[in-house]
Image (cartoon, one colour):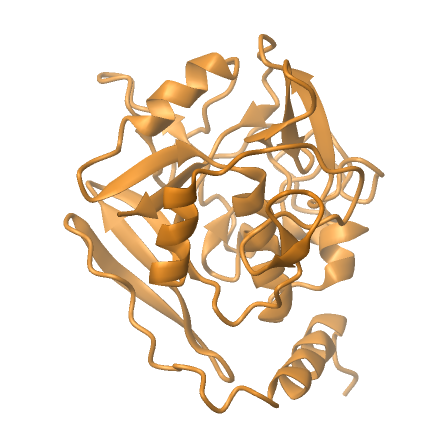
Length: 282
């Protein structure tokens, strides 16, 4: 029987990564943070425990372990030597400044947390939430997203609107673990999410967790398609970079693939951009 490209990619990746992995901590455990409870562990045959779904006050987050990734990311847009960082897959990189305390947290804990689902809004409290079955939040400009994304912060962690480095590191994680291929991420992302040309397209903004096929790697939902994702990456002083395509786009169209970068003015709000929250432990 012929193997599917994804299976072949996984086998190739595993064979390449076998060398030099003898000292890898395969039984890695997530950091213990007050309020967070592990509800699922994702284990890889070579790397061991690579991710954890964690619940916090009814919200679902994913802890991405990154200490096994290639150091091919960038924090400054010039040097590509970081496991956590942006990747120059498609288009020119913008600019973002990530606080040193966040980078120190990632190094210490060997990973970071990202909302498993696109963020929706609690109708009663106005707080941002990450929950299955909810329709993701849209039609808010950047300035009305930044502060609410920070409202989860406690003495134990900081919450933020995700950086471009968070998005790209999640993409690199999916590729290196063999859950998707680089071609699917960079060229034709149709099979990865709610794109217009998908055979199972919702043809509108779909609820979080609508299709198990769109829960990539069993750890992150609707990362490709459905809504473009707003990040803190900048293109000039007044524009913010959005990532990936939305339900109106074809997944094989240039500028709509999962890795794509586009930019919108900070004051603009649309029905095709959503947001995800990143958490950096203290």
